[in-house]
Picture 1 (cartoon, helix red, strand yellow):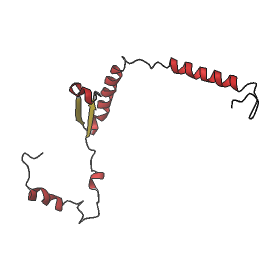
Picture 2 (tube, rainbow, N blue to C red):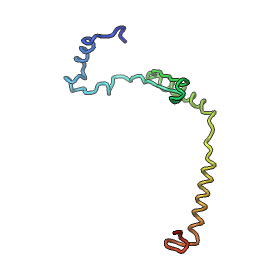
Picture 3 (tube, rainbow, N blue to C red):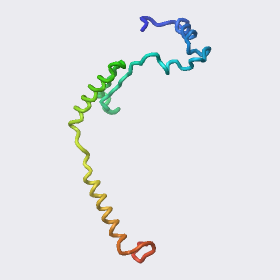
Picture 4 (tube, rainbow, N blue to C red):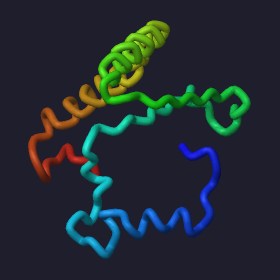
Length: 122
């Protein structure tokens, strides 16, 4: 990175001679096909909302392509370690409601027959 800011002329002159400039349509988007793999920016937070903004922790790091596998291996270990305290959702109430609904549905369609029978509710 340059140590100083460029003035307008210094910043625009390299752009004019860049191979992907509009004057050279042979490479319209040179940044979409880089000659070497680019580093990746990884961002993470602890998921706190706006109400708890003071407690929110944000992290970011730049990972080079050759270090990506090692980074994600360590990241997976950290995530797994953090999920040990999680417990399964309690779905027992939902299952009971589903069973009751099925039981009620099955009893209503039994003896009355099909469409237009006497047992049909009006």
